[in-house]
Amino acid sequence: METHITIYHGSKQIIESPAWGLGRKNNDFGLGFYCTESCDLAKEWAVSSLSDGFVNRYSLDTENLEVLNLNSPDYTILNWIAVLVEHRLFSTRTPIAGRAKRYLIENCGINVNAYDLITGYRADDSYFGFAEAFLNNTITVEQLSRAMRLGKLGEQIVLKSQNAFSKITYEGFEIAEKDTYYVLRKSRNDDANQAYLDILEEENDGIYIQDILRGGITNDDPRIPRNISQ
View 1 (cartoon, rainbow, N blue to C red):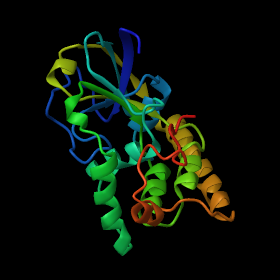
View 2: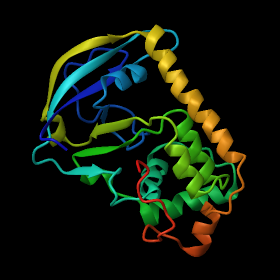
View 3: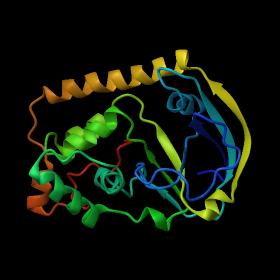
C-alpha cells in the first residue's frame, strides 16, 4: 500500500470529520469507518433505489499504520469468512452452522482490533449470501471461492483505530446519482446471482464445511483456496 492514498466513503450524508467509535458493530470487520479507493464503487454503495447519495473524499497517510490485508496470499478464504461470521449476523438454517461458526472463529479467526487499518472484500448483497450458504453446508469451499470471484467484488479499506482516524483529511464530496449508480449496483448483484446459480448446477465433490469440521481442516491444508482475489 502506498504511503498516501485517496479513499472514498459512500453515505447518505456529508461527513467532514469521521469519528472513531461510531458506526455499526455488525459490519464485515466490526466497528470502523468503511471506505474504498474506487470513487465509482463508493457511489454505488451511497445510493438506494429511492435517493441519491454523497461520496466523501479523503486523503489518508498510512505511514506507521498496522495494516491487515485479507486479500494477500498470507490468508485464505477461511480467514476472510471467519472474520465475517464473527461480526455479521448470519442465518443459521442448519444445526451444523452454529458449530461451523465457532470452529472458524477459533481456528481461522483474526483479531481485527489489533490493527489500525484493514483491507479486504466487502460481503455486499449476493456475496454475503454465498458466505451464508457455505456456513450452512450448502456449497463447498471451492464453490465459495469461485462465487467470490464472480463479477467485480468491491475492496474496502476500514479505519479501525484512533491512530488511523488521526491520519485522515477531508477533501470534499461528490453527488452520487441514483439513476446511474443504483442501476450499476443492481447489475453487479444480478450478474453474480446468475453465475452463482450456474455453479450450483454443476456436480461437485469438493470440501464442505462439515468435512472441515470432521477432518479438523485448517488454513495450512493445500486444498483451501488461499486468496479470494486470485
